[in-house]
Image (cartoon, one colour):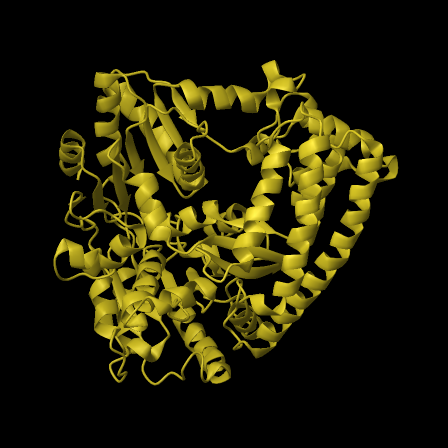
Length: 624
């Protein structure tokens, strides 16, 4: 793998390389990057999708630097939301009513006053609503009285000027490239021409997330209020506020209609298929949107003539972005995809429809070399490299004509000796016969837990399935402690509990499918409750319109990559042992599904059975 990366750097070729768990993936790209940095004194960058990997990479980079006698500057780049702003915090704490000033706020205030402003270093569970009142915001930072002593501005200068090693997340890197594309000043050193994207299987989602724009009615009102405040002449400002009151009424009508749209979709959705993104009916609100846009145009006209010229341009940029958003929303031939989400109130979201085109233009130009790697990029185990990476190539716009596709590097772990897959037959359909599947699935889980005496991670695709199975298991009087992932709880805290209590059972979903590392006996039994097919939403439905065979071209590849990530939680080091159980019978021998063999071929564990007695005897041998 390291030689493939060296060749890619020498030939200036963008490269895809899948690297199985345990081959030393990070070392395989860090060593070439460090030598490139040492020889040419040019900055190099590594982007990941998780903070946990960034922290591990810092340790790896420092260790390898000591071996090759190289001492570059190492910069962990973060966005402004990670930092508290001393000016905003002072203002916020002064405005709080003394009776609301609790112990946590006192501790947070002391941290910030003592210069501890990186949220990661504040050993306190800070509510997001509070943090949003004290964190750094886009503004004219040069005018701030704390500019010279600001940790965030110091980091920003390092990000722009370093000739060393930069580590960041994929979101921040995408924003940087987007700014450069628009002709704006980037967030990072513009001399960077060698980049590694680790955890690249997430790149499409991360780029989409960083290109998303969203508005709720409160954000729209806040932007317009800020703009009106820039008008110098009081009579004109008063007149604009009268217009603003009309806008408030229009917004209420729009968002009430959107709220009703979401309610209808929630009521008609299948149980266990939890939607996070809802379809938006533009036609129902088009008339109000046109009226809203004309009212905002009137405010914009007044601002052009009567605003304070010295005000920072971010306020006007936000107004311009809002108007572009509304015009795109109204347009029948919009290049954007729109949907709704509901976090206590309705938000309208938008992102470019053609994300692969965006990724191609941002990441694969001729001025840099981009190396993409992950343990799970391929969605097939057979065929040419182009066939094995097919879905990833399409979804990222990777230039196969000029790029290099490295043969996937298999894990060195002895999967067929240390692990076995159990798959089921005759289980009810997990969607069409959900209630029976939940009931029988819980019974299967009890028997599987008794085999390994707990030590299990049970992965779900929906919170409602998790909750119902947890309630059933709770009343079974199991001798193992049951742990359940809590909404908005810390992943680290519950993982620590799981690791400490070696016989415990953890029920989880979402982020627990990837990125968690539990080596040793604490995780000996991995149970996949249901195959992780994508839930239908506006993004998935748009992909459906572009596919001739949606199931095999989109749905199955997405499911396989996520399943491979989930299965990858079991064997984390050479001597780990365990079983994987997939309770979904759509890949059983009696199933007629066209993808069952593709699923099994894609998994590193080839040893499998549908006889639970074989699993019992296998584990008895492993546990001796």
